[in-house]
Length: 283
Image (cartoon, rainbow, N blue to C red):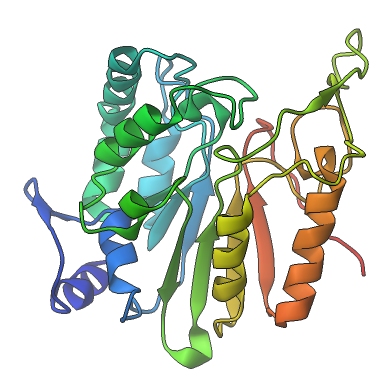
């Protein structure tokens, strides 16, 4: 980890926060990839769904594992509000967790949001406070004002690490900013099946045109391992809750784009569901 921090610091154009040790944040890494690639990484941790009003002992286990990078996939707090003062208070409670504070002292944190930290359960483009919520999100994760994230809608981002023969690319998607309202009408009496139905409307969107165009550019970059983070499940079969299967045309578009760009080594990671599983998608 010290090697990672030294290598990035000597490249310049970094804003460093010192609290006894050097702390690196996602934004500083993103600045580096505009013209530079971060150093090699070996161990990547990822997770989601951290209720700020509960104890979070898992951070101590993550710190003990000494990951090179920590990916937060959303629901990093349960904000669920249009009151940005309340949102900041909830981020403050999350940031005060001793284990999380220790993690930020040793490990770069790359973050994107999902619905609860976006601001509303299962929300999308209709949420009226998304601009304000973005500012709170960016402030909490200490995004430098020169970061490209400030100059475009949403909070999507991409990062690259390591030499060409071991290049790791981390792509983090925003599945909230542009997402169309979901189609409802599914079962409501079964706890294992949610209320949403797959949409037959090809005009319903998940990522939006600007993010799709950016994603194509990212997928055309060379990488041996390409991790795509999405707050909601991509590979999972339809279960009536939120997921890419709610918008099958958008899910198919992603599969086509990966094939058309020749992107290799693609692994999807997601949060949201409060349990873990491994899935594969057959051709």
